[in-house]
Image (cartoon, rainbow, N blue to C red; front, side, top):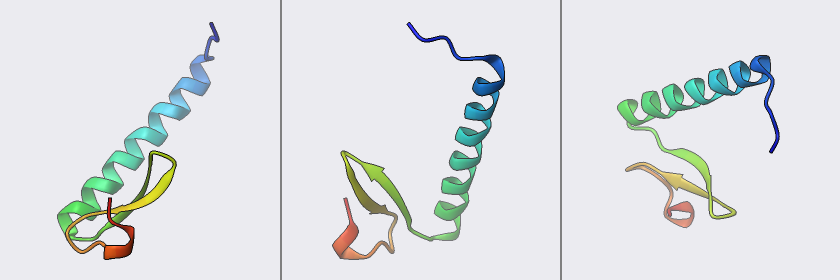
Length: 54
C-alpha cells in the first residue's frame, strides 16, 4: 500500500475543494461544465452543447 505524505494529502484536499466549489458556482450561474467521465470528456448542465452531453 502507498502512503501519502500529509503535505500531499493537504494539496489533494485543497484541489478537490476548489473543484467542487467551482462546479457548484457554475451550476448556480447556469453554466455548463466539462468533466471527465468513463474516459471521455462530457458536458454537464442545462445549457451543455448536445454533442458533448453525457
